[in-house]
Structure formats: structure tokens, C-alpha cells
Image 1: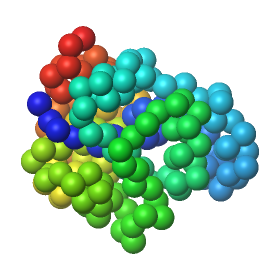
Image 2 (image 1 turned 180 degrees about the vertical axis):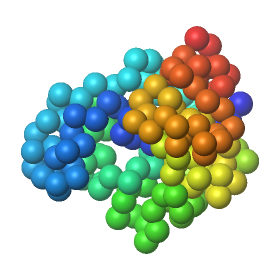
Image 3 (image 1 turned 90 degrees about the vertical axis):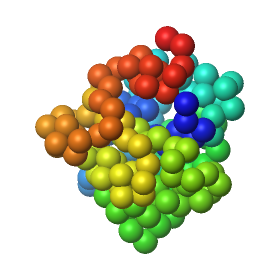
Length: 169
């Protein structure tokens, strides 16, 4: 079992695909107003609750700005021990700097952590930081690229992730 779990936000915890065109155009006011239309992927709320109950440290590492990240987390009432967002680092995924910052903030070593993400850049960043990787195929929009990034574990569902993490299903 891992002592800490690092999770990407978009397309890993929440299905935010419909907001992507607005995000690309940096229409943040419209994005923020549509956060209530987002849905968590099946099993995510229960997973986060169980991680918290089992006292497993959690972090969100996202390439999104902190104002967006915190609005999404607040909307769902999700508590994380650490967040690392776009403006927290000079370099961004696939560079390992965001993952390393999360490890530092969590005060854990890379071998005690596992990172879950829907994109190849998530796998590459975590691997470069020495962290085990999970490909979250339940929300990916780049299935082939994620598979080619060769994550340690490939999970089609959150239920599969629970098995990897050693949590009861």
C-alpha cells in the first residue's frame, strides 16, 4: 500500500471535457460559471473518502490554474492535503517539478507515492520524479498516447484503481 496518492484533476477526478474549448480560449469567467455542470467520474467521491478515512495523504497536481482547481474542489467538497497548480512551478508536466513539489509538500519520498493521471505527460512527470504511475483510462482523451507512455498500472475504471491501491471494492 502507498502512503500517498497524487491525482490529476481534469479527466481523472472530474469529466471536464465540455469545458475544454472555453479553457483553450481562456474564457475563465464562463468556465467558472459552468463548474456546477461538471461530474466526478463514477467511484471518485467514494475513493477520496476512503483514502481520507485510511489516512492516506492525497495531492492534486494539475496543469490548471489554482483559481479553477480550488473552485472545482470546493464545489465537490473535496479535501486534499496538498495542491500543486500551474502557477506553483516554473516547469510543468511532463517535467517532474510539479510532482516533486507535491512530494516535498506532503513530506514523503517518491517510493511511498503513486501518481494517477489521464495523460502521457502525467506518466512522464511522475516517472521522472521516481513515483509509480497509474494510467487513468476512464477519462482519457488521448488513449493511445497514454498507453505508449507505459504507466506501471493501467486502470479502465476507478474500481480497478482501488485494487491497485489495495482498497476494498
